[in-house]
Image 1 (cartoon, chains in turn cyan, purple):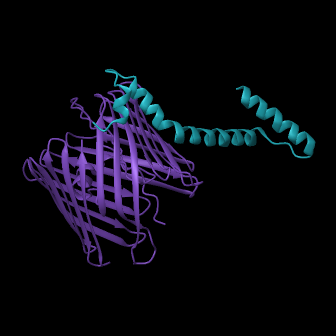
Image 2 (cartoon, chains in turn cyan, yellow):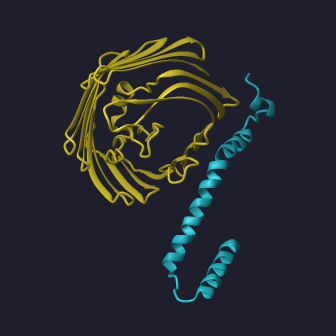
Length: 72
Length: 308
């Protein structure tokens, strides 16, 4: 939320310095959704497999850490 | 580029309460997954043929969690417009992690070039399931993702799909009699400005399954599978596109024996294929794959080993 607010204020000040055009709410929404999708893609790309591993290592019965790396 | 093939409706459960077949992702390297109406025909006629060496090792850490390591060395086909096939030799290693719980299933595979295939299936409640499927790459604009919401009613199923590129689809299938189920689907692809509607029907008894599907993208697909005995199934498949005038018919067999499974088929394009999985030992499977395309003079042979 805080990051969204800061992005909005940055955007607005940028526009103020440019003058002239005013972006509509719809365009703001599009920009934010694109930004969110990009961040979500990066997070999923790097974090999905670690997420599965964390969930798996915490499920019962708890496997040991060496089992993760050894081929036996 | 081929037209987008619409998602297929899936089979639903009977009014008597016989357990329903769950919609299942076939993990094909394809942005839009196929649903299960053609399942028997797909299983018998379209095994995962490959060319080269394949080695898969799955290691279970506990009942629900397992890791998989997979090595592939061989040629992969690059789609080309001309009649010649272009093959690119490639070798890759794929690491995967699976977590399978009654309510939650997470499957992830990552390749050495950074591509990620992710599948999530989450049973939010008894009747509502959330599924997500994504293929993410480092190249821009080449990633795909899709989220499905499935609702299972007493004798019907409905599904809503939302994917990237403004793809929205919905499908519905209803069991009409003991053996017959009918369904329909609509989809809209914003990026390609295409929309489509399709209908599907499936007639199933203990001995045979017949399905038919029609779509406004010009595709008609019919299939028939006969279970001749416990171990032997025969299947045939017919696909016709009235816009591109493309016809393919194939006939195949599926022998499920105690120690092995052999599938073979022959096509109207002059292509024959066979796929053998032999169980050498507990947890050790040997795989042979062959595909001979007489028309294009393309011969593909592959062998592999699956452990675990």
